[in-house]
Length: 232
Ligand SMILES: *Cc1c(COP(=O)(O)O)cnc(C)c1O
Image (cartoon, rainbow, N blue to C red; front, side, top):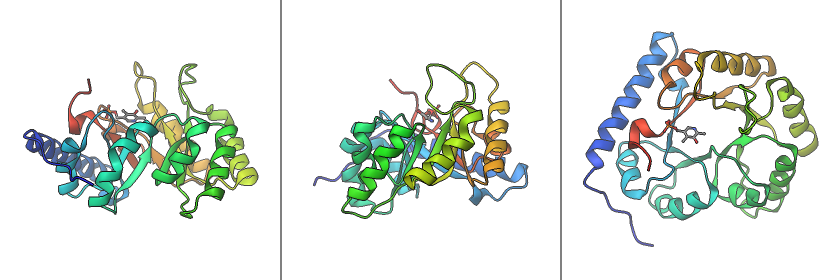
């Protein structure tokens, strides 16, 4: 397998990455949190190995992709070079891709319906690798009809059903607030829900609002464009 080479814009990406890392630490300290309690998920959708390598060399190991097929094209070569990479699926997952997702991803952040839990359980049972990803339940905090995720009021029943019926145990919750709204009430709602359900992981906050999410208790922030630049 060929190795991926650095592009000339790599120093821009590396310095943007360093800035995000230090802003995350600062945002955590400002609210009395340990910076190590916040995991940066570097979102690499639409970007290739030449953009990803500078942050790998800088020590980043946790990455997010929103499409299974794009991730399958991009990551196997990088995983050969850096076997300790942790990959998160942060986009909608079709049931017929459950098997591929279980084979590639360490964390699936978009669990949002029973049919998907059923397919994931089957995929895990069949996987010869013995791999079991960790799961976050996506919550549609803004009740947006076009957006994936379970309604806040249905989250407890959904989490319990996934565990009891399928052995799919959620580690935490994830949300994507409506773009045109103040995200803070959405982050606060997700944090409250996770606390009520005794779930540890809270995936919330993107390039425009990750510091606010950290103030509300985010344990994972998903940051793409602030590191890699604007997407086409
Ligand atoms: C693309 C994406 C992100 C990153 O968005 P940026 O604004 O580029 O940081 C985070 N979460 C999800 C679910 C995404 O699809």
